[in-house]
Amino acid sequence: MITFPAKKTAKRTKSKFYITTPLYYVNDVPHIGHAYTTIAADVLARFKRLQGFDVWFLTGTDEHGQKIENAAIAAHKEPKAFADQIVWNFINLWGALKISNNDFIRTTEERHQRVAQEIFEKLKSKGDIYKGTYEGWYCVPDESYWTEMQVVREGDKVLCPECHRPVERLKEESYFFRLSKYQKKLLNYIKRNPDFVQPNFRRNEVISFINQGLRDISFTRMTTKWGIPVPGDPDKVLYVWADALTNYISALGWPNDKKFKKFWPADIHLVGKEILRFHAIIWPAMLMAAGIKPPKQVFAHGWWTVDGKKMSKSLGNVVDPLDVIQKYSVDSFRYFLLREIPFGADGDYSDKAMAARHNSELADDLGNLVNRTVVLVEKKLGNVVRVIAKPDADIAPLLKTTPKKVTQALERMQFHTALAEIWNLVAAANRYINDNKPWAENDSAVLAAELYNLLETVRIIAVLIYPFMPETAEKIFRQLGIDYKAVQWKDAVRWGVIKPNTVIRKAEILFNKVEAK
Ligand code: ME8
Picture (cartoon, rainbow, N blue to C red):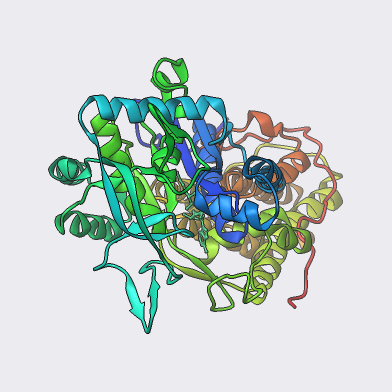
């Protein structure tokens, strides 16, 4: 086997990787925003598994609080029965999207409720929880408290500064978490760990927010009954964020389970930008108070709009991922979301943009490359690989640099760059066919060498796209006679994996062209 003299990817001291998504509210069906975070987490989980990491990938649902209670009332259901119904929309969607999560946690599960209560008690025993009265504003859709200074007034309406929906006035007895005490410690942690909050511009936002001064936060609710009972004060329930954030350790069986010991601290909490403060301020402060290590990184991505507008039921522009994958394919959808915008920035979804990428980059570029290669091998070599040829100078330099660039991009969460690099290689391979014209080659040795180069290039591309498009990669591996279960990331820097006498299976169309609406 000829191996490129490429250096091994970065040395690692630890072989575990723990990645999480937010726990999605079960008030409604999932849309492309929820799919986005979960697909991004899945790509990283698959990438790390291929690299040999022991991966734990967690997702789940946030099932308590006033928002769910109100949605259940509107549906004439008990909150738990309502959650039991809605949760299937998430479980089924993750199945359809080929999400490879290792666990799925619901905050109504006993294993979670126990931990949420124990953490509350622990903070209380440390003197970081105290009794008082909360008086101020509350945004139910965001489940967040706002002060007089923060709310937006428009005429006689009082609106949430984050989502611009009306807020409620609250006055209730409550237990507060002494968040203010952790201001300095948090700032130090963020400064000492530049990767903790990413991207960098979000890190700066978090730092300036903390510098404005942190206020203690109400950690219980009285007027809402749908939640985890406060230990020792059953008239109250835990504030839904104080409950839900602890899922990241409850799912690992904190404090004694070997999963917790192995996987904590989390390597990455992936979140949307609107919930960054909960994850980068409140959550690490809770952990510090409980004497538990903070996560290594919180990465906040941007928001999708649809046809230039915020997705909303009233506008009727909420995109159901199941509709998209039915029209295009799971892999087209996964590809589009991560190729269209840099991770961290906002983006816009439209059927037109989706169709454009599907038809040109998937059907034309990748689909044709694989199809042409396999058809040529069928016609010219009778489907059988003859020899292992050396990498051709026309394509070898790119074959050598691309895997490295893709690895680097994935390690920096630059999914769109990783895909752009892979598509440079796809374009180079298509050019290689056009320039060398193997269909007209009369010298059988030259022909065998060219086709071998194409087959190995296609194989390497399949390795590189695997985290993004597992179904497509598997289809390609099957055509090349490769057991996809045995594929590793380092196979992308190997040459000579396809052996002589391998039977190449007949081309199967990877992507059918689709017309935009
Ligand atoms: O906030 N664009 O749950 P949630 C991109 N339960 N991502 C989007 C999006 C959009 N338009 N809309 C939603 C909650 N998301 C809490 C979290 S965690 C302990 C508790 C994604 O159902 C994005 O990841 O409102 C965002 O942070 C998340 O869904 C919010 O989901």
